[in-house]
Length: 152
Image (spheres, rainbow, N blue to C red):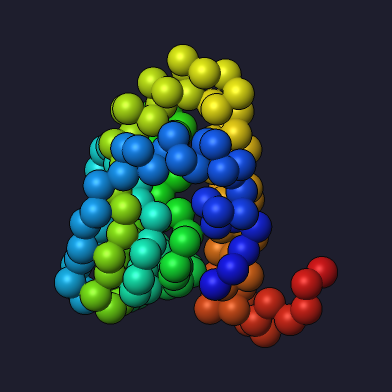
């Protein structure tokens, strides 16, 4: 998926290069959890290949899939905002290869360079806004009496 919220679209080349210097290649088998709701958000990922589903625990029901993420997309934003606790769950829906970043190191870089920090904050904020909108639509589709209908 190409979106304004992918790292390549959202960050200038200079900041992408600085961020990628911290990247560590990781992989997840299909069905693996990247993180669970309520746990400490100490890292984040950019998907290289595969699909990651974001889901929400719903009491008395199976988890509701809020969104599926693919190539170039940010997995996890709770690392950027105190108290640094995951608010959703993430599961590899297929084998996933990703770049992993240590949240504390990236936050320290943001503090040390205000312009870099602003670019990261705007990017993460765009991701949060897009995910909240997608969550609203998905939850209306799942639980509203007549679905979400149109975008009103």
